[in-house]
Image (cartoon, rainbow, N blue to C red; front, side, top):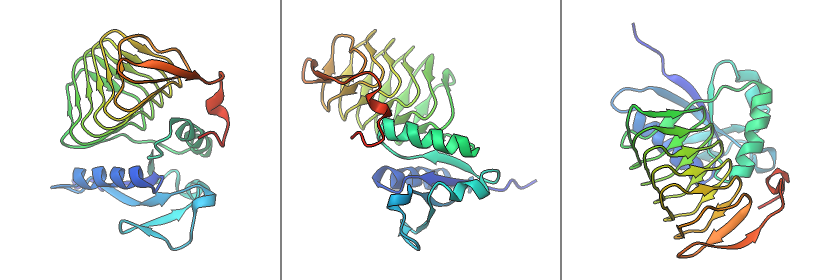
Length: 229
């Protein structure tokens, strides 16, 4: 029996949205597994009849209401706080979320994950790793044994997470950062590009440098403000 490709829509048509489309296309060789219908954007970014990488921008989130039972959705918005808000709106609509993993990524069978996870090319995930929902792991990241990435955690390209590290909800780890073993990155914290984390990072803190040093702390709940950058 021939199985039909899974119909998928990508939320977000920016740079990472195009990279997520690349992952779907890579997964479609040699057999087509996914039929990517196009992109969804928020209303203020929607231009009728626009095309991104040969795929149509279908509309804003209201488009999903009519098709939510026919498709799966993955959110390719890079900002963890904006991704969280959009996912909440899509969940209220009744959307179903899928995971997408580039075929060059290496995952052992001891990796577990929630829904809406994106893992890009060249990543390596080893043993007893827990990945939450709507986590993004960008190009060439490595994640060691017994690491935990909570919901909406985001690893930019080239991040190295050692064993027994916990990356809290909504934490953003910048390009090329390294976290040594047994450290905790607090929820909604920000780790600057190239930083080396030798100590635990508090929630809502911004840490940069080698070794990483705190430069600011945002108020609890800062990520809930719609217009926060």
